[in-house]
Image (cartoon, rainbow, N blue to C red):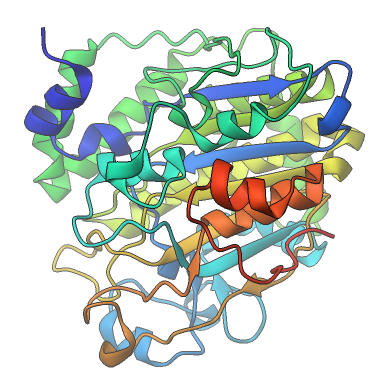
Length: 419
């Protein structure tokens, strides 16, 4: 019997690790609050290597437009201006009001210590393990190591959803499982075979991904939750009544798997849970990136907006961190997509963050400024942002964060992530 990792690496390639149907979720908390207090932390793993240069576009760096002629950037091409240098991909327009409200921000040119091989599996393993190299990863994830330093942690307040357990919460600290009812008729082997085929054919990749996403959403019984209209109304209010540019499938997504994951997350966080983690796939945009970004961006936007809506007053004490395994190439490829890269973007949101800023030591995108001439140069370890969030939210000693939770991490100066 093949083990999962050997089978996926040897037979399927990178698609399964990046696929939108692989959607785990997990929680942890302590009913007596204790060290975790009333603050909430939500970690979203964005599987597939999100293109940070397309999400938060440095249109003020004129070099990018020279190498991205199909992946148009900047406000003149429909993106939403952030600060005169960076613009937000229009697929994330639902989140733009949160930027203006100071509840959304980004860390640019960041990455884990992972370099060069650009494997989804290794990249995600390292991101969730929180170690300095693939060889150093153990059996637990960095959120679990954090929880091991929380006295009085109880069972029943940590959950994992989907085909995979969240490795970021794997370890001795107790966790439980939860999954939405999803009636997908394809077997896991059938889905994996489709992913193997579609990954090497940009046209089939796009059509197959859309079909499986729609199948999953339509075959999911929303049950008592019917919040799509509420989300549309909330977005309409926040956008000043203009929702014409919102993705057409927002209501379906909100009533589908992503909306249900966010709703369940919010319900648990309003109760005893203090820590949550889940993943969203669909970011592996080798071809037809504009359409892929629209789908994946809508999913992430709905997840964050749904959390904001359903958490109510708890949102003021919530920090959301969305992180991906690595970025993508500076230049676009011949199929209007991008290939696996290095530096990328992390997203932070919530009432507890100091939003309205792009935190970066911007390296530039000229060929001589890139990592090995092809990728955005990472100038900060993405783990440091999670570390500073832990320190600010829960008061962990810097020594524990740098040597135990994230072994070998240099947190550097406080980036001002939290309000």
